[in-house]
Image (cartoon, rainbow over all chains, first blue to last red):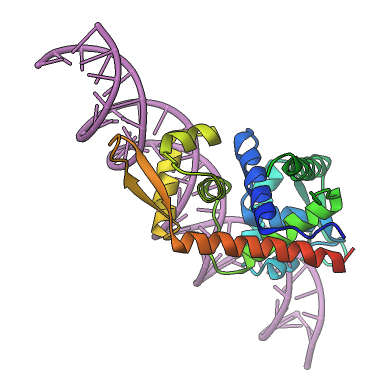
Length: 118
Length: 118
DNA sequence: GAAACTCGTTACGGAGCCGTTTCATTTAAG
DNA sequence: CTTAAATGAAACGGCTCCGTAACGAGTTTC
């Protein structure tokens, strides 16, 4: 179905979306942060620091710090796991959901705009 | 055409590609660097620092430093414009072309893999 | 209950990017 | 010619992120 993209199409898409993200005044998330954020919002809970670190193939402090900075932006929240109080459960927020939705809109919009070019 | 992507599709695509980029050991380029690199490789020359800065809506030193770091990675080169020696022309390299091609492959591969999920 | 283990965080030194200002070089205008 | 403008680079201070090595709190094992 509709996901057969040519080389030129995917590169233009990647270019246009990044251009849009750079131009606006939102804080640019790093590739790591994007990966973490979308993992949290796209995959089924629960999400723990350990799981995310293993999934992204990075050290645990990377996750901790990414949660710190994204938490400061209101994109995610942390909560202790009452079942096993060593664990921290990462949770979604309204702000984060809006951010993800806006990102999806940007990508989809740039994708459909590609039709008018080329 | 063929670029009508649903919200879920674009988010999964974005997620999967970033996950792939984070997992490998390549140095992650920032959003600004990606924008600059793809502008150079997708749009017709000549490219100058001034033009790129205006196009991305950032200050000129941002471009200079991005060219420094990407030049260190062998992704781009600089050359003086002999017609107007104030200008610097940014040029493509073989390494850079391979990098862009590999990025396109990653994106296209993740896009087609989406068909087997959902 | 003591020791070993697990989980997430903090601490530390190092590296990279950012925004602004300043500068050297080159070209254009008077 | 002299002056003004334009271009890209360098300098400076600040902020963020990184990787490794500790650390405290909680849990399991014996």
